[in-house]
Length: 170
Image (cartoon, rainbow, N blue to C red; front, top):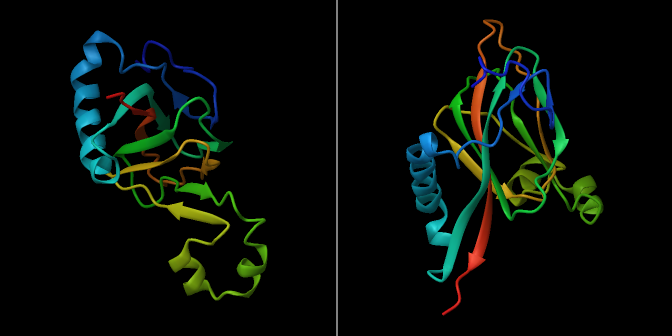
């Protein structure tokens, strides 16, 4: 896909490549089915049997050296996620912003670092990408990706996706 469209889409990416929405295309159905099974296995214990999860879109991000993603969220869906296909220690961490920083301001000022970590009360929660790891988070949560600082100029490749959570009528 990148060879066909070297510029890609421009959304939150800075110098990186963002594919068009692709998992709905016939040739990618087996990948969508795999990803959907992976997602349901991951979140299935958190949702009731009357709940279904649907794909709202999926795309590939390729971030080369110094590429990043600015703060953004994913409107018109409930959950957002990322599956890292290729990543290493220096390929840029995802930063999830605490939406309650202002509400927790006094706590953030007085609590020690370990307590803040344990209570997830930091301003930003950082996650280093690991190949084969998937994260899912509320779609309205502001997040960014720090620059890929690999000295070997290896790309960070991920599949990002948006999900809707629906309660099925009986």
